[in-house]
Length: 105
Image 1 (cartoon, rainbow, N blue to C red):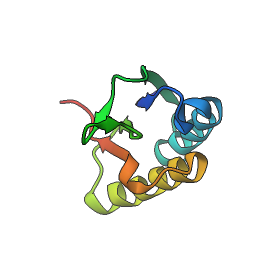
Image 2: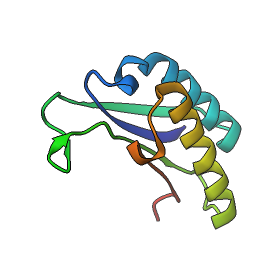
Image 3: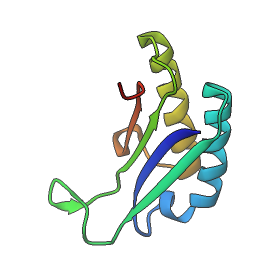
Image 4: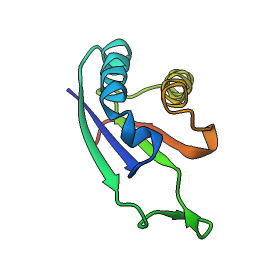
């Protein structure tokens, strides 16, 4: 299993489309890492997330790869991951923080 953690804002597109995003993130994990995604979703309650003193519209999506990735492969996977997220939610690239880290030592 590949660890995946998603932080989304309550009532925003990512929160409302969670079931579809779960399916797409699992398919991404299967394709990228040949293993299913073990997903943890954290919903930030309305009024508890802010960016520049305004309610936040940002999401965080974080995967941990099973093996170390070279920089080119990581960049390709991050572009694909952000493409999945923005296509499903309609958010901009400025509203998503995506990471794919190497495994812990």
